[in-house]
Length: 209
Image (cartoon, rainbow, N blue to C red):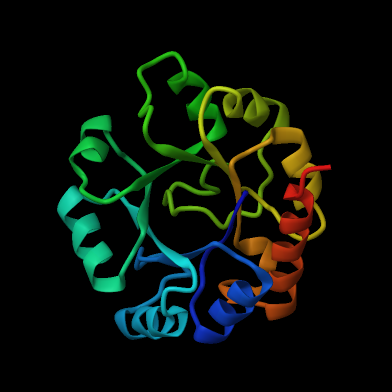
């Protein structure tokens, strides 16, 4: 089970997540997002992580060149692509790709040749016309997500927290989980205690019984 904390903006939150057992930390590289990290903040997180967890760059409508540049700059293990992303873009990107897609669009995509070697992050649709990635706090339909998870390697997102992640894992059986807004005290501000509780709950739920 992959446990991801997205929207990490400080070394303190990175440390809390890693010490609790998180596998992946998300750096939001979308300037319009309230969870955006500028270059200095991103580098501070990278320096704090020191290889103890994998870093994932969250990007919107990015080109392969932009993804590769970010990966080199911030030592990213993968890029999480949101927005308008063609399968050819994924194929031409020389960095592992996680394709973020909302559940409604994912259902339609199941009828097509759909990035078979690409991890898929299932999230709720953007809450406004700006199309900003993630952090809506909206849960996805777990029945639909579970159906998709039977066919694709899925990371489940959408309103997850310590209070609901165990039930979500049981219902959907994803390869991983991802949380952001459910770990915040205010927009873009993570609470270390909530981060730790979520990671531990996800870890406990993933233990075979």
